[in-house]
Amino acid sequence: MQQIGFVGLGAMGSVMAPLPVAAGFSVIAFDTASQLPDLPDITMAAALTDLATCDAIITMLPDGTVVTAVTTQLAAAGFRGLIIDMSSSHPDSTIQLGTELAAYGIRLIDAPVSGGVKKAATGSLMVMAGGSAEDIAAATTLISCFGSLQHVGPLAAGHAMKALNNYVSAAGLLASMQALATAESFGISADKFTSVINGSTGRNNTTEVKMMPFIASRRYDSGFFLRLMAKDVTIASELINNAGFDAPITPALNRYLAAALDELGQDADHTGLYEMVNPAAKD
Image (cartoon, rainbow, N blue to C red; front, side):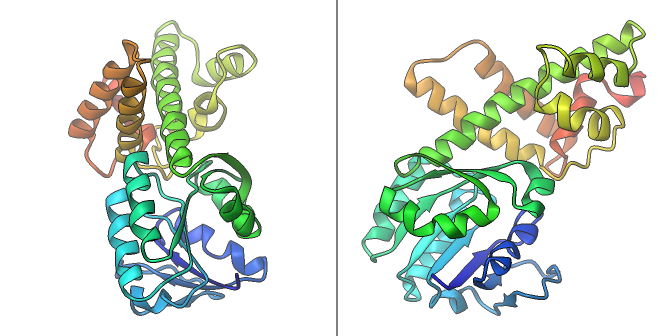
């Protein structure tokens, strides 16, 4: 594989797309946004169908519905290579899409990522991939441009893993926010709370990465939308329920995130959830 297509140049995609160039791949990118990032070493396509002759195409899009629409259009335009979907999609739709694309001779890997924009820019994401061993092996050099590759199982296992990861992350996020607000009510400063938690058994990604720069500061600009976290938690909740491992936290977390979206809006950063737990006006 030499010619790589990249579809989706949002917060994550715009910093990920240049990474294969540094590894010797040629990248042509497409996005429907009117304002596109300046990516000097990447060819910007005028139309999605311009990517049809690529060897492989990476998608970094909002959800599985958009991924299906994009890949279906590419298939109709004659693309016959490998699709690597790095978006967060529903595993069931990924399985269905894999069957539909196979009819065109197109192979599909689901390879969602975790780590945020900062790790995306440095190529140090966790990439959780689902697909055949043969397809993963063929794409290892390319996928490894973005970080640490873990082949977690068959097609759709990657998307299942991502949803479950974000479910655990969201639960830790909310618990950490509740604990911070309570600690401050006892006169414990945010920095002291964070220092103690991170030296104790309660530490998690929220306390280690997000607490001081994005939550305690009330900047709420980590670069990951609350709506995307809520979407992944909804997917994970369905998977958990279908597998018979439901627990009280599952529906409660779903309801809380849905209420937060209604209150904070679709453009809220996920760290802005703290305004639900401890509104600034309450301080």
